[in-house]
Figure: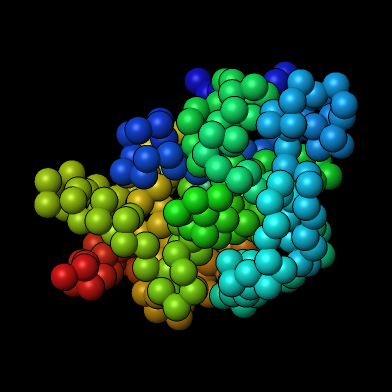
Length: 295
Ligand SMILES: [Zn+2]
């Protein structure tokens, strides 16, 4: 069961039900398989049929910082450090994952506040859960909806990561899509250490409920929902692959290269079983080592 965006759209990924995660309004990532609703396209074009400006997409200002095109109803500094970081993050993603840069533009609609964002979402996407930000994909456009606020940087890093990945990698499994977005949503210089997710995993360890299972994550379908623990575990596997040794990073890069080449690839779990005798144990050791950084 999952919410829909009109009859053309399906939810690609979610971050769990509103309020269930420690984040007050987690962001959400949505892929539109075919096209956005007519209403959405009209709003993007500033159609005069809209009831009020407050119910349209932000459009007063347009700022181009390739590959980003930022639309807002308030001025945004062309060299705002947040935009500089997003541009640099795109470079990080390409370098760390050995992925090419795409020239495809990422259209970022930046709502000036929560109220404005929620009014728009309730009007045009009433079936969607309460979230701070969304990534949307059509056959021709990559889009991010986000709201200005205390967590806009984190939200944009997360959603723009999805856009960068979707621009060059087809059929990315949901767990890896989210695991990578959770990895790259932390500020540059943190080496992907997502303390919120690490805290979730450590909490599971303390309660005796930590039972990582990558094959189970791989069975999560593109339209399924992931809960907070699955987000955290996905992040943990990604962090382990990228920081548990050079072979893990090469494994992940090879997997993504195969996806790019063939739109399908042998699952990460099978590759990992050839690399380490006990992937779960190796992940457990990796996370316990990371947990010492929480103190
Ligand atoms: Zn996401």
